[in-house]
Image (cartoon, rainbow, N blue to C red; front, top):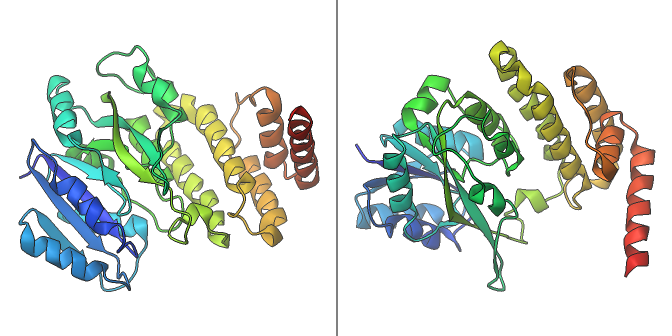
Length: 332
């Protein structure tokens, strides 16, 4: 049994894959197994993976019979993982040198908690590397081990799976699985953080998150698949329905959901222009059904925007955006 299982779902990343694999296999310190899941990639990824497995016994390759998407490819990797802890890594990203050793030392020092959270940095084609704006969260005073009640600001972080190490038995106990569709991280990360009794932080950049401009980045691809975000939050609230002891978190999660829904529709290149009004209608129906007692919208323009979105006020929302843009132009 290895200390870490690093699960890498692979699809159309042949230009980046070798660097990703090397970033895992070049780690020093604890034992690691690298589980690479070929999600029926149509390029040369399968051959690259087979070559890596032939050269290094720590690499296990799963060739899926059909393309199932990022979330379900991760599930396939989980089914064969044997490590004490599971780390997810997207196949166009890289681990930073020494990360697994640092994680292992922190886990050992804190008694093997359920989840360890680390930071990330964005990397750009021109060579820039920029640490996430959330770096202050990791530097804040905190107990060594805590639950979410002690550090609710963890829900302000980007809710992704690839900035954490998860105790594999915890994953099994909580029956965590990934759904199909876009934004598949959402119904994993919220239940995981809410359910974890023991969380710790590592104030270290652990992942270089590649900012791709070409079609490999779904967040920069216009598609109706961005409507999947509604179904993913339905799964989050279904989890809360089964955990009445966590009811106090409903207003917080609802607020984070509104922020996320607003991000999806406000970013250019996600929701196609012809589908934006429908997105607002769906948002209004969604929010009317899920809005909990005790929720208070944030102050300022962000609160105005999310309230307009949650009530389906597309025209008023567009007017507020136009006014904010005009004010920015005047200040230049």
